[in-house]
Length: 108
Image (tube, rainbow, N blue to C red; front, side, top):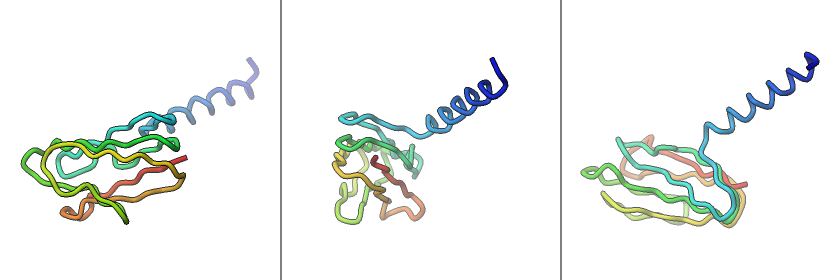
């Protein structure tokens, strides 16, 4: 294999590795974000249009909420909240009870 071909393969592998560090989903799929230790795990997710994100509460004694500009989950200690994203864009959200507890959904 020529050195230039080896570099192209290496570049593709590096690109794939960096993209894999953020959870992502294909159209119709559901991605899960966990609320635990006063943080969103994974705070940034990438999904395709017509996919969903489900937030799962795991801080059993600490209440949280998932709040977007025009919608929110309500404040609770356990349970789930699911939203389906039908439009492309970046949608920021946060927990109104815990400053710095922020996340975003990037829809392609």
